[in-house]
Image 1 (tube, rainbow, N blue to C red):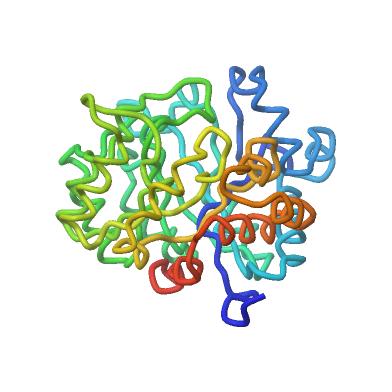
Image 2: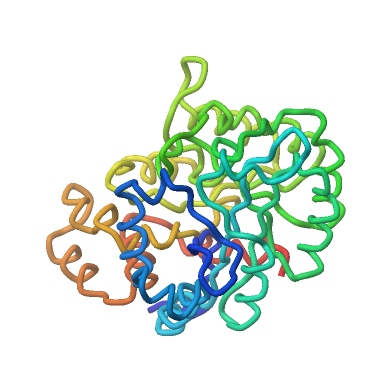
Amino acid sequence: MDAATAKTIIDIHCHTAGIGAGNSGCFISPAMRRSWRYKVFLKAFGVTERELLQEGDGLVMRRTSESLAASQRVSAAVILAVDGAVDDKGELDRARTEMFIPNEFVAAETARHPNLLFGASINPLRRDALERLEQAAADGAVLLKWLPSIQHFDPVDRRLTPFYLKLKELGLPLLTHTGSEKSFTKAQNHLADPERLRLPLSLGVTVIAAHAASNGRNQGESNHRRFLRLCGEFPNLYADISALTQLNRLTHLQRLLKHPELFGRLLYGTDMPIPNTAAVTPFGFPNRLSPRRILEISRIANPWDQDVALKEALGVPEQIFSNAQSIIRL
């Protein structure tokens, strides 16, 4: 273990879940509950629906914190709220929202666990978006997370300019999903085109492209190529490496690491709880890792430690594991 990275890594991309138990304010749409994804995610979080009903949705974060505390490599994780779609009045539109995890719930629960950090989520079309943004910062948010393709807004919309300027004023980086979204039952993937981030980038917002726009296409061009072009134009564009070891993205990390000029702008993330599913396994890299190394990594019990070891073995340099500390709002 490298002493420089022993227990100092921050995971900037970690999810939580909730069904409304314990007055959390969370909800899952009927369509999402019927989906196969629902049971997979509960199992990955290490909880059952019955346990949540008995103990409340905070149980997910408690178990996340306990697992993280057992890690030898990762010291903290940013837990991401998920705002929903909004209606024409700027109010939450439950009918068009598949998952809602409110800021208030995540802020309160992360405050209970020193190794969990608050990642806020605010649909910028909410009528009180600026007030919500200021409140999130006051509550200790270290970044703001967006999923435009399921929150149904366009990042290029110039009505969002005051929101972007407030983000910049507060020093909150914007972590926004880029590329195709497949964790929900439906998505408007054109809204996660990295080219749609030109407005916040031009205004000086620190933008983190989640998953480095590693999959999908827009206007006949790969999202990854569109992301790389923006990197050449905007030094305030960063990316996280979460999800890049999933079986459906096996070549994406290798492709990204061919650009050492970006190493100072890549941040460590897991997309937890995905590493707790069959979608991520060292056995998916027989052409990159020796059988012995694959077995060694597979025997690492802690999911964060296994994730770090796998990414190190695939060539992620030490610098990337420590970049987050100078980017997120600690």
